[in-house]
Structure formats: structure tokens, C-alpha cells
Length: 113
Image (cartoon, rainbow, N blue to C red):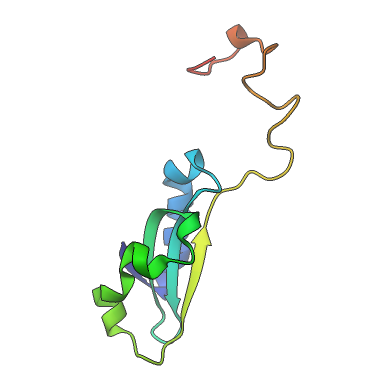
């Protein structure tokens, strides 16, 4: 969990996308959660939470108990964003499966066949 000022939010998201292994390995299932406060121009974020917890963030993160939350105005609207990695249609299937039976595993530099 980290807090950010608005100027650091785009860079933080970019750095996470460039360096995360959890979101890459568990695409669609893990995500980084950003809680934004437009009034204070700050955000609080949590790395690699299960996307299935999106409707239970209070319980899963206890974010309302953080120093950041206590600094926010009671009238502030908190907006939430999940950042996930998803490969999209056509990523996997016949002809795209890197582990398919007819793959020439000796012709590749992968660690695992």
C-alpha cells in the first residue's frame, strides 16, 4: 500500500506495468487497486489484489483505517480503479498454443518446453 500525489500517479502505473510479475502471471485474476480522491488530488494503491474482491475492498484492505483515508474530507468522493493485464481475443487457442503437441521445442530458447 502506498499513497501518491496526482503528479506521480501516471508514472507509478507505468512503472508497475513495466515491472510486475504477478499481474503478468495471473492476468485477469490479480490487479492493482487505485483509490482516487479528486478533491485532495491524491491516490492510495494496493498491489496484486484478487479482482474478485472488487466489491469488498473495505474488508480486504482496511483502507479506511490508513493515514491517507483519515486525511481525506468526509465529503470527498473516492473513486476506484483496478489495473489488470488481459491478453484479449485470439491470444490462445489452436495455432497459438506455445505448448501444443506439434511444437518444435528444440528450435526455441524457452526455459521450459
